[in-house]
Length: 253
Image (cartoon, rainbow, N blue to C red; front, side, top):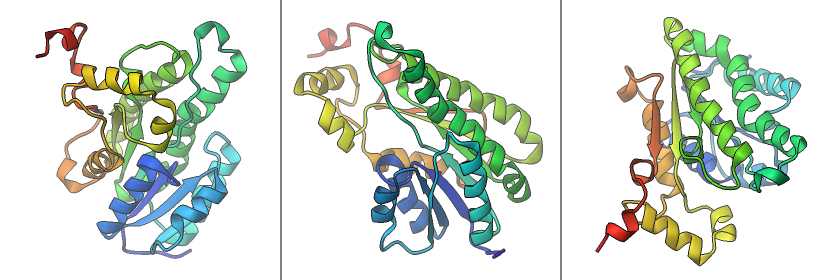
């Protein structure tokens, strides 16, 4: 097993979007990053040309794959200082059309994956007095149409964060949660119609979507010594979306 003095982060869902932006920002801070994703092709493309990374093909909903991933990381680096539980799936549809199979698919990745990766990383995080950052969503704070499984899974992640913080603090492990609002991603560009974009802009005080880099900066802050007394917290990085109520668009102008 290699033992490095460089701090090491594990980022799940690292092949694209917020996970890839977070990976790049950690690298710019001099960290090593284990890039974890179940999409092998995208993972290979995303990691190409990056130094100090370990691409690991892993489905975080599968316990045996998570344990194998953690073994690979420890063989590569010998330490884990930060775990970013970012991997997630979105399955939007009317509640009456959400089958138990669809519900289970969302829960296995979005909730079980966070639990499994955190459990597997605990021995290494206890050794480093490291931290966990769980990625939830504004949908875990505000109920909305078509998100019965997704929103519920993300609300559970927010509470799991508090449970972890309450129990792991005695080991010096900090646990926090980031809940992104609408973010400019390829997925959003593909599925958000002009009408949806306009409605979101009206409802968000900053009148725009966030960027992947803006979310990544908060994640990296929470992993840093600057956040050394911050644990058990949920930060909504959403342009003020969660702070607003009904009627805001009509009150503007």
